[in-house]
Amino acid sequence: TALDEAANNTTWGRRGVWAGKSLLVTFHGESEGGIKLFQIIGRLAASFQEHGNVLEVIYHLLGLGFEGRYSVQPDGRKQLDNIRQQLLTQLSQRRDPVMPALSPDFQGAISGRLRRMRRVPVWLSAGIALLAMLTLFGLYSHRMDVQTVTVQQHIDAIGIKLPPPPVPVHKLRLKILLANEIARGLLTVDEDDQHSRVVFRGDAMFVPGQKTVSDAIRPVINKAAREIARVGGAVTVTGHTDSQPIHSAEFPSNLVLSEKRAAEVAALLTSGGVPAGRVHIVGKGDTVPVADNGSKAGRAKNRRVEILVVE
Image 1 (cartoon, helix red, strand yellow):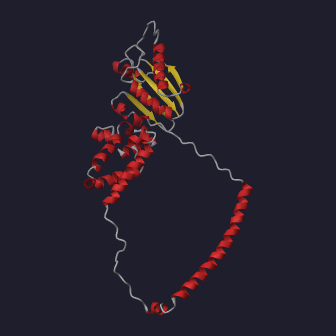
Image 2 (tube, rainbow, N blue to C red; image 1 turned 180 degrees about the vertical axis):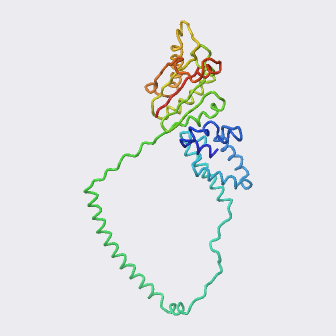
Image 3 (cartoon, one colour; image 1 turned 60 degrees about the vertical axis):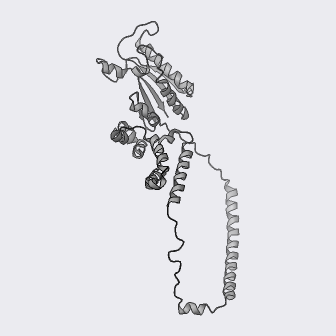
């Protein structure tokens, strides 16, 4: 799970084979490692003496930047810090106490020269040391006063203006947020540092020949809307159909059907928190196929709605 998340934070990991077939999915058929790892921490912590070594490895993984499900939560960093602090406290209690000295009873031999030095009165040694310290203190105090005046004059002459703090940059993480829906085949996500594209399958999203979004897909769109609203950027919702013609009073053409389906999805994004001024609606009809319209499987791939966010 940690390797999958580290790969997903790179350009080659988001675009290559890894994006569609992570280690966790390949070897365990699992897509929710970012959630289950923290459940495992809770179970292992109940028997800390038995599983302390495993928990120490997990503690170091968290220190290397693993975030899991907390990467998409507003206070995720604070919660991760609390988990790491709890693990550190338990690990510290588990270790044996450190002895203050390697050999408490060791006593070195005293050379003849040291014996002669011990004959010097303590008060004389202390007086000489005090005099030297006072002399050094006076010299350094005078030098510091001179340098302080010089620095203050330079500061007053320049008039330093501090730059404004940098604006925090929020990146979309829809691939992590929608990992379960991706594994179920309801949608696909293509992300890099500049854009995120979510493609919904039309057959799972709409009743055939209608524009109403199914109840099963509405929560997914609402989840994506909350994440999109968290960052800036333009949002384009594009509807696509297959080449099978449609003629009805409500949908006189495939172009009209694709536009109204895109408008329905855009309305759900707006109700989920995305500002309406950021959302643009486009209907393409059957003009941009991604598969052969001559087969049933190809037509199913062409019926889709795409949400493009350009940051």
